[in-house]
Image 1 (tube, helix red, strand yellow):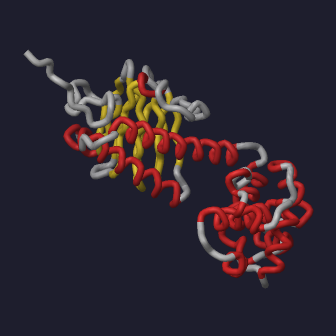
Image 2 (tube, one colour; image 1 turned 120 degrees about the horizontal axis):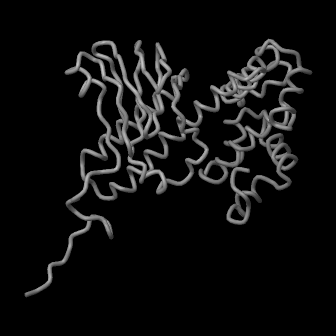
Image 3 (cartoon, rainbow, N blue to C red; image 1 turned 60 degrees about the vertical axis):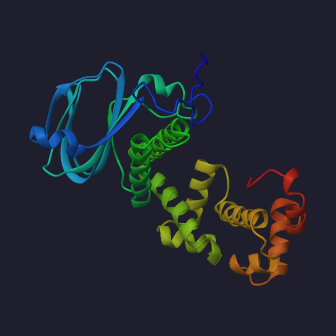
Length: 291
């Protein structure tokens, strides 16, 4: 009798899976609505969880600590932690359950502080990204597409990177130098919004309501660099991207990045990087990318 040949969607992945996934995602309402939106204290031996509620009030117990939350919050719940919830009726959000076995298979998440905690998402951009990432994860888990395992692992990694960013932001805001940290966060946001306008350091300082000397001191402290150099680096990064990944002429790049003329752009690029724009483009394979 001929030996049956297994069918794989990718090499090593069974076409029909015989074991449950190491990740599970469900809407808050799926389980809570039938329990009057209250989950009694319990714990999981092998499952860690992330619980996200969007734009609502709710309460979570993590061991002996109760968090009363309002807005957009995510809670991290390691395996073994006693936890319970009280949600408002019709709350919108997700519960992500992750088997501990999966963590060892995902690279680049060691920096996440996986302790029982509540993390607020104040940034609309990061919140939108998180929601989209969770929705993509639900899709991958519900439909057995080719490469499902790889997609699930990468989406979990993206979600945890998003969580890590919020942790770092929260740590900065909770530090004794909260006001100074906020100046730096706002400076970075202003650069992203205005770098093509070629505003000078004094103009940035005015928008941040600090002196030029203070902005310089903070940049030296946080980045070991001057505000002017940081602004210039952002312009150079964008110039390198366009030289590497588009067919735009140097003249077009100069115009779109706000330079008065291509000659000024070429001098700026060479002075900052040590090579001409055309040389950088020709030798792209031998140069460090976006440095």
